[in-house]
Length: 174
Image 1 (cartoon, rainbow, N blue to C red):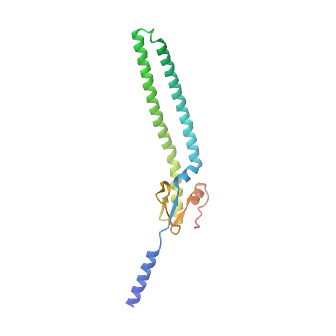
Image 2: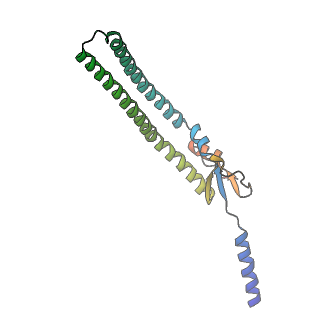
């Protein structure tokens, strides 16, 4: 009886050890870039960048015009006007540089704020597929960190996640 119990226990443990962990894999960036929300966010960012670029161009044109006037009249200006104009040009240049830096900071912040809900939506869809299909984890194949994934253990889930993003039911079949 005892011998039979140990054989049964050994068989059960062997069976449990041979059970493989299932996991999913996908290209996060490919899914992200295919989302309509991502495309819209990129269009909004491009429009905002265009607005900032137009203001920078206007500021640069204003500086160039005043600089040309300064160059043209520099020989005829009295010393105090010459110094005043130099200070004005210096101030315009500093303000222009500050604006460029601020515009870049604001563009980065806007991109970050626009991407948070989009990434959350994608992460939620990945989690939903992972949970419903019983995967232990999902691997992001971007950056070529996994040059080989065994199809016996891993399952490509990009189509499943895309279906969830489109509001379709999760296709659970392997």
